[in-house]
Length: 295
Image 1 (cartoon, helix red, strand yellow):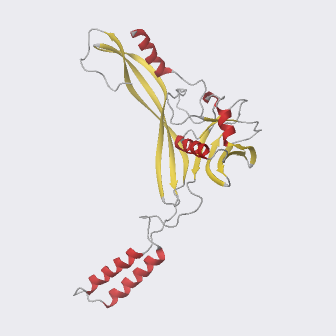
Image 2 (cartoon, one colour):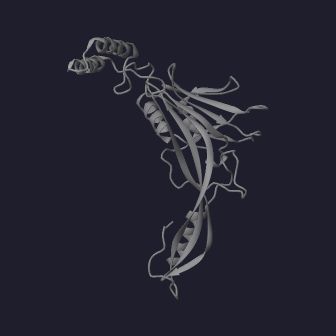
Image 3 (cartoon, one colour):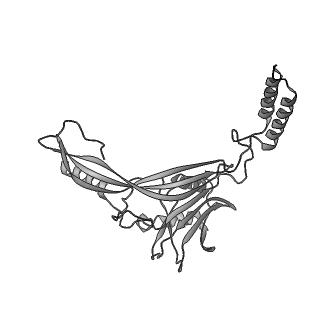
């Protein structure tokens, strides 16, 4: 039973993809992506048709009627082999779940459109792409998502609480304050009254949104490799592993209607050390405490 547990632990740490799904600058040592043990949304794989030469960027759009819900730009490698596919919205599982929820509530309402250099490759119901995805493997995925745009509502919401005051109204309040300060006597309380009036005027101004509403950065971290590097004895034998992580960096611009655009800005890599308990007793023990962190 112990041997089975050891084999399973090592398999979970060292299982690798046969082919990297992204084209990007790598560290000096070649790294293969570890198969994800769990995803927040089932993959939506899109089989690429014949693209022709010099197809650099694939554009994917998903619409409900004439309203675009999500768009994604995927940078393609120089040579796209037959049978290659794109892992659609792999960086945005929440949007995949959102689209599937819409399709479930209103079947047939979503369309999937893909284009290269303005040429339409695919224009089909979203359900067709979903059905075809079941027969495709994530190991066939290629390309790097460079931008994702999400639209929450079809119309601009003019007011948004706490965003900012209507500039025309605020300017009028400022002018009234300046006029009040011209005649008030700083030796008394009349100037304080000017500021009180100004605050009352400013408070009545509508809150409006300024584009962009907000900007932020976020990262997606994924383990891509694990290499065993000897054992250590802490009553039990622990195998040391060096784990390599790939960190994708994105910049998000949030608009006044709460839609947002995410742009891929680059990739970095990091390595850490962790331990796996083999459950084999050993001697002599270098320490009674359990080494950390555990894998």
